[in-house]
Length: 312
Image (cartoon, rainbow, N blue to C red; front, side, top):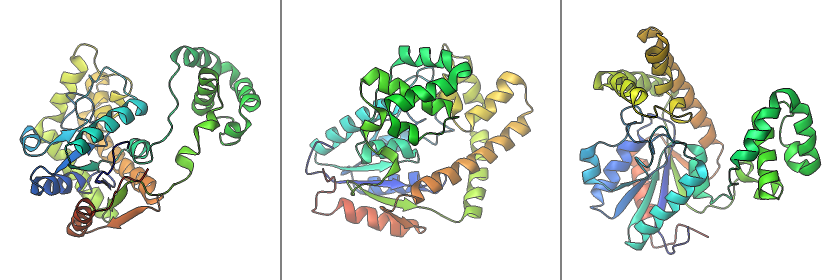
């Protein structure tokens, strides 16, 4: 972050671990001194409310939330866009003298902001040209990457079409090697923003995920999916990949039995929680708690401290 001194802390962990409730409670008790920045790739989409566990309108009246409802579900939204929006929101919060509380489970978005990653731009025309070639010429594309950026090629499986295309897209579009954008997610640098992790036993997490999804269904998640799918523009490529929405869309668009779609959504949500758990557990800088009260105390201690917690 460019604004300093700044009070900031991040609350991370898998879905259904209780992060949102804890963050709201802490921010509410601060009486306006703490504002929340959502770190959720799907929370940026308007109308995707129930299945993303967005704070309710009443909760948003109590606590100031940022980076929710930024774009329509038909639009694409990149990590680079998120990074810019998050930096802007943090600057606004800090200028007001308030503390920033980052909360969410989208690990890549969090790393982009907390570590201020150097994110390569998108080059759509080059991407389309490479996509047109990749099905028949993947070995050739990999050899081209090997010649232009040997380091990037050494980090990518020759059969991983998506990564080969992305590395070539950036190398050709930016006029500099893809690998020159830094180690990125491959290493963990010094602490810029303190991260507090909230977790629980997997069987407890599994039970929470199922009960939460069935509660969402009772609250109208299926109707929300139908409304979004039938709206002008519908759901774009990224939005329709949201866990829970993707599975219910198979019922809405393909006629899959609803019970099967619901069970699939619960299963995929549990898998998502495990992927998130693994992502955050790899980061040695996260201080973990299973007790929400202890996590809350740690968050409060950071936000109440006199030190500069965004360390550039």
